[in-house]
Amino acid sequence: MRKILLLFFLFVTTSTFSQSTSARPADTDELAIRQLLDKQTAAWNRGDIDSFMKGYWENDSLMFIGKSGVTYGWSNTLQNYKKGYPDTAAMGKLAFNLIQFKKLSKEYYHITGKWFLKRSIGDIGGHFTLLFRKINGRWYIISDHSS
Figure 1 (tube, rainbow, N blue to C red):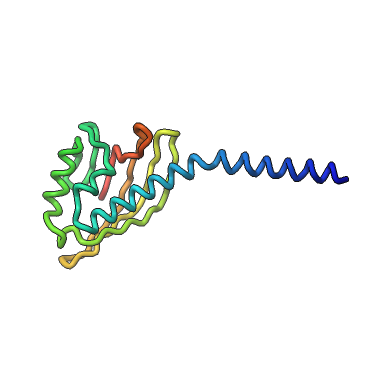
Figure 2 (tube, rainbow, N blue to C red):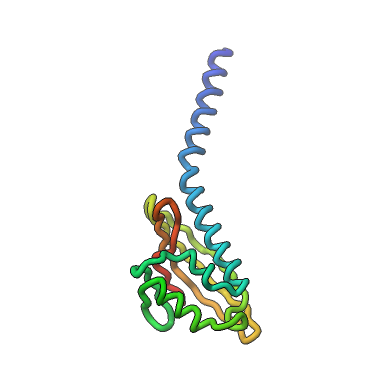
């Protein structure tokens, strides 16, 4: 009877360990993306657009879709942010409400959420979809559709 209980205990322990380690990479990736979004929020709330942009892929193929249409490229996206949000009053305080994390593959995540700016000049907000890609071991936003 002891041998049976010991074997059962070993089986349960091994199964549990195998399941937790196989689930870990997705959890680690999601955590890394959430931390990146938290860093972006903190940078925005400090009025630091340059640091906010570190979450975006610094490449001419970056795509941003907003009220003015499609913008390609990291530099163009940075300039649009600086033009649209010239000071901390315009920037306000950013908050995200993350609605869905969807793993598309080991390399891609699709995120849906809401954004909100609390501002002295009038609050604004909307929805967004972000496509993240893991490049050289780090997650970057490669496409942002914000409305």
